[in-house]
Image (tube, rainbow, N blue to C red; front, side, top):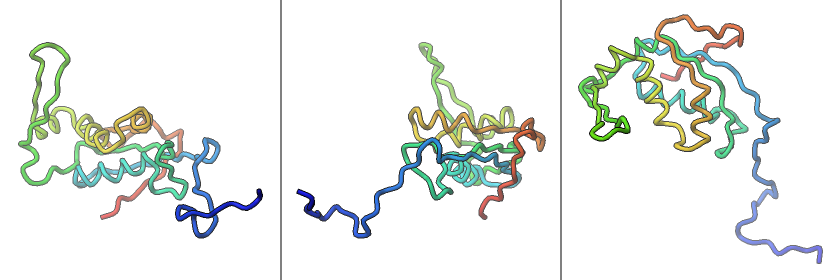
Length: 157
């Protein structure tokens, strides 16, 4: 009874797939400077940091990501004709369809534009909501998280 029949689905090296446990996860605080960065490229990289895809212990169904602080959100760059693109949402009331241009949102609330773009690149479930709570966005270079000893993270490109 001790022998097991091997199938085509067994791993050749005999190893089992690693799954991160809550004790394995160590979170860092990272600061990302958005000055002169393209909004979409910035959001894609920050979303990957929030998910933990840069870590060797990345597990898709676990929150292995770091806390990310984005500074200088008002200096992010919208390329092409994206300033004129409309963003639509619904207020929840009858006839409550709303719209604003990306440029208008950038002028009035740049932190909301960056947060919204990053949130759209996270999983759309409870795990994504948990990752989103680790995101902090500020318009200036100052942030109130010095006690967490964050380190600067340089974006690729």
